[in-house]
Image (cartoon, rainbow, N blue to C red; front, side):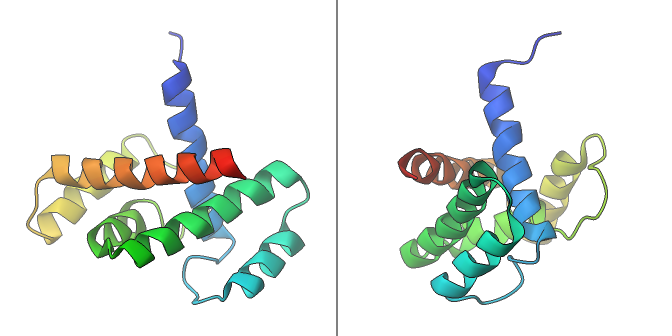
Amino acid sequence: MEISQRQLEKIRIISAFRKYTRLGLSSTKLSPFDAYERIRGVCKDIETANDLLAVYDTMRFLKILGKTEVIKAVHAVYFDTLRRKPKKNEISSRVIRYAYDNYCDERTVYRQLEYARRIYKLIREKI
C-alpha cells in the first residue's frame, strides 16, 4: 500500500502541531520574540524550526481572524499533551469527542482542522 503525497503532507503537518505541543509552546501565552527564542533554543535544524514557527504563526493568524472555533478544534484534537506515539484512530476519536462535547457535526470539525492545515501550508511555503 502506497501513501500519496497529500497523505504524507497531512502527516507532516499534524506531526508539526504535535511537536509544537510537546515542546510546551501551545499552553503558554508567548510574545513573538519569546516564541522565536524558545524555538531557536530547542531546534537543531532549520526545517524543524520553520515548521514550529509556521504552527506558531498559524495560531496567531487564526486568533487575528477571530476563528475561535478553529482554534478550539485544533487544541482539542492536535494539542493534547502527548509523550507517547499516537495510537491508531486517535485523531478520529478526538474529533468524535470534540464534536459530541460541542454539539456540532464531525464533518464541521474536520473542515475546521483542514482550514488550520491550509493556513499552515500557506505560511510554511512563505518561510
